[in-house]
Length: 209
Image (cartoon, rainbow, N blue to C red; front, side):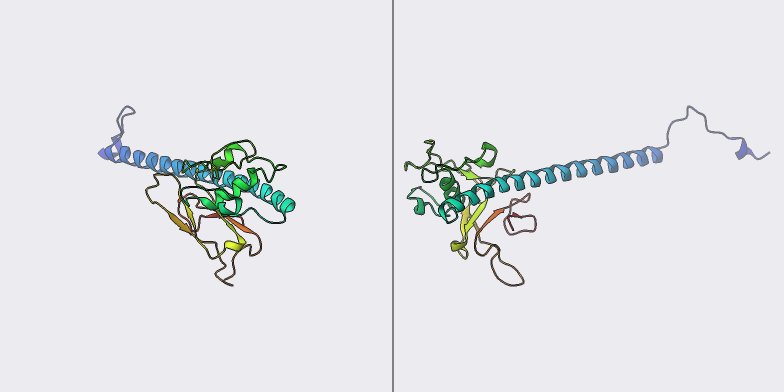
């Protein structure tokens, strides 16, 4: 009789070390895939939310242009509003114009589309509801949009994500086509979110063009 054929593994025998390691490796792989899928889902949800915020802002900008024959300015001086710095000035000027006394029939942006990341305000009365704060419109990560009126294409705008932003001032330029060299939306305006990587000028930027 062949001795090896008579040896049977006991039903109560434990797993070998190799089997345990294989199971742990499989569990680790499944957990990694789950974490990756969940992270990707969250990112896609935030991108969709940012596009919704951008669409809300575009609707108000369109209404402003219909009423006034021009798009909101990207300089506070055009609204006779003073501030102490140029952080987020372009998007602040856009929001101030939409909320200003000169545009009384327009709607306010929803709270979810607004922020005050650099915590600034003005002593110049401009807001038709009396608020002194120079608010920005921000994406779903809380990062202010870069805004450009077409007349300012070629000029950088300064964006800060917070008053204590460790990266300091971000100098952002309006986007141009790599093929033609012409600015996107040449006769209107540009809105740009830095996207998930918090950096302007990269592939994950979210734009209105």
